[in-house]
Length: 192
Picture 1 (cartoon, rainbow, N blue to C red):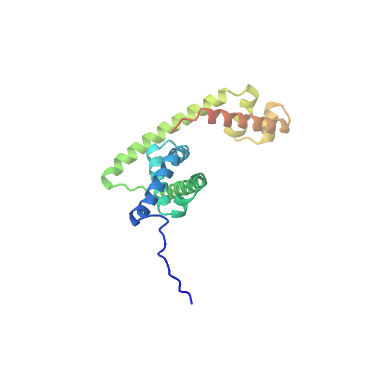
Picture 2: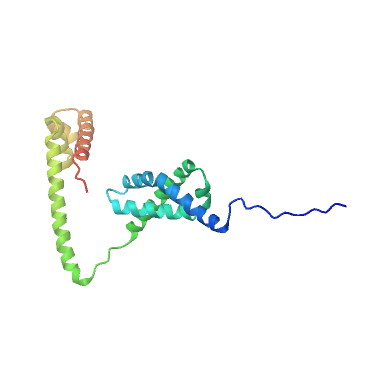
């Protein structure tokens, strides 16, 4: 009868210290390869807030650190996973901001109301100026139709009668005038 001797299993990954460092090395490599791409992806979607983009990028890679399957995967196949996590983190952040009420102390309330009223007046003036400027860019025919229908609250038929054109013409001029206004206002929208 033959006896089998069991040899000690070889360590594929080396010593315990080497195994402990493997996730760190993989994480550093993953971060070096994709950090700029993820940061750029988030920077385009955070409405010009570089600090938020940086915070979300760090959180994305922190989550990758807790998922060994991402660290052990091919680094190119990890990029879609990183984008998905970054996108989900951004959505979570925007949702939490939407539902979080603004906290104001009683001492700051009067100041806040004064600043809010001033900001509303400024916004109203800017909006009025933008709309007037956009209306001035319309042709006389389109401006007349918009004025009668939207500013003077006349019906299509009443505007058609005043302008001496068929109701269908008033409708089409309204359509093209509004499309032109929308385009003009989008082009001149102030950057927040």
